[in-house]
Image (cartoon, rainbow, N blue to C red; front, side, top):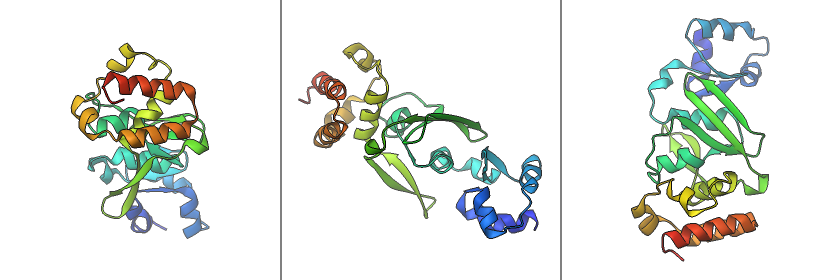
Length: 206
C-alpha cells in the first residue's frame, strides 16, 4: 500500500489512529507511518494518532484535534470562555476536560491540556458542526464557567474572579442564570455553590 491509498481512505476523517488503519488493512506496516511523517506527508498528534498537514490552515482545527486524540473530552475552561468572548485573553493552549486522567500533549497543531472531572460531571456540552460534516464537542458557556470554578481552587474570592475579566455585556444579557444554577446543583458541591453564588452576587444576578 502506498501513501495515497491511505490518504484517500482517511483524509476526510481529519484525524485517524493506527487501529483504524489495521481494521482497513490488517497487514499494514506501521513503519510506513513513521516514514511518511518524516516526509511531512503526515502529522503525528500523539501515540497512534495522526492527521494531515493540509489541515493546519483550517480555523479552530485545534479544537477538533483536541476532541479526537483524547476521548471522551470536550473543549471547556479558558479555551471555551475565550471562544465565546467571555474572557478577553487570547488562549495559546487548548483546554479541555475529560473523565480520563489529566494529560498534556504537544504537536504541530498546538499545546493541549486535559483536566480530569468525575464521569457524572461530563455534561453541559453540545455538538457543533465542524467542516460541514464532523461534530465538535464544546462546553456551553455556563458549564465552562462551572468547570473553571470547580477545577481551579484559586477562584474562591472576589479579587481572583474579577481578574478573569468576564465580559460585562455577556454576564448581564447572555448568561443563562437558570441553566447555571441547574448545572451547579448537579455538582452537589457546597464549595462550587458558594463560588457560583459569589459570582452571581458580583454581577447583581442573584
